[in-house]
Image 1: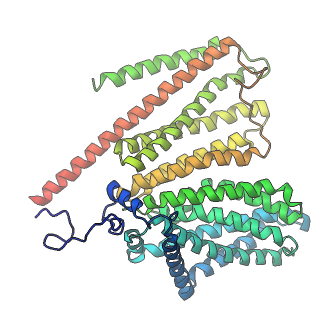
Image 2: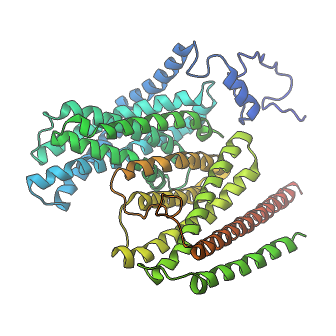
Image 3: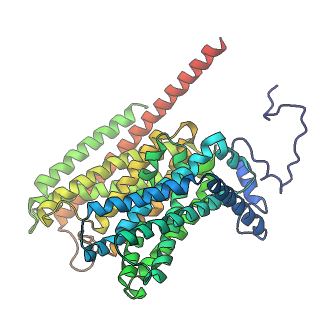
Length: 275
Length: 230
């Protein structure tokens, strides 16, 4: 029999009401059921029923945090790797206090960037085991919400790693971050948000490629470049103790980039997860 | 018809390019301060134009592919991506050739130079992604990446422009003292058209080649299926 259904003839079909259409996701995503999913009242985040959307985001986030809590592999490797970058930089640029102060923001951002690559790779390498990524893609929810959950988990991991890296740098370079922390911390958080926004999407893209460990930095570094520039420029100003107005334009740029990257990723993640 | 049209296009491109190069070296007047070196401008600027246009086609093709799932749009994006990469590479090669005698340095991290380099890196990543993606996902992933990359280029330009810029400001349409000598303008426009025709020829040939590759692949698959069923 040429049944279009994978479970064959004779099995009662699930009733496809317009509201339920998005819940029964097809095995191949066609334009038709994509449209049906978009029309589902609770499938997009910007709707009256956004509590459900928040619950989905929280579920993905909680899953990643629980997994990390049980083996602590990502955080351990990312933190150690970040500390090693700071450690190596000390030998790359043997310099006095004044000079090292000038290099510090760049050094930190190089460490953050490499730590991020490790974090994003790991985030989706986990999902590949036992075809978890396919399982999530088949779940009757908006893929953009899965993206937001994964992104928040990565944001938490990378922020923790950044605290460790900054602590190591503070210790080894004899530099106190405390006086400038009021501006340095929010700036770093904002730029990290932008970086994680693009990194999570590209981690998912790279998870589908051969040689994904190499492909992730190749794909994401050119695209994430403006984030690094803004992050380095703004944190240089903050660490030097300049008035915030002198680097506020960089902060605004970073915020704009973060918003653009999050919106683009939210919209495109559906295609990245597809098939 | 299948063979004659490309042949005509090829001949036209060939003659046009010859004319364009003759104009660059024998017709165009010598520039006052930069001398002979300035003649590379007639190649450099059209290369930039074709690279940018090809990249726009990659973006549009990717959007149409994700929207309509039309394989034609994806093939066109792929072909333009490869051609754009060639033109962008040539652009990055001719730039330093001009910069060394005029600026005294091969390269500087100026807004337009850095943006072009990032554009080139995104082209490279796009092609590598297409090469390394597994099976049926190639098109979708490449299209998503192309859209991301295209949105990124203006941001890169903006963020780097806040550092000082060294690249010459637009020569034409940039105020009272801008503009070209009429003879130079003739050479420039001829070259612009010549390189555009060349770019279209490349994209078309690459597209045809892809069609043939796909036909061959599906023929192989069919043959294999027949072999299994027998």
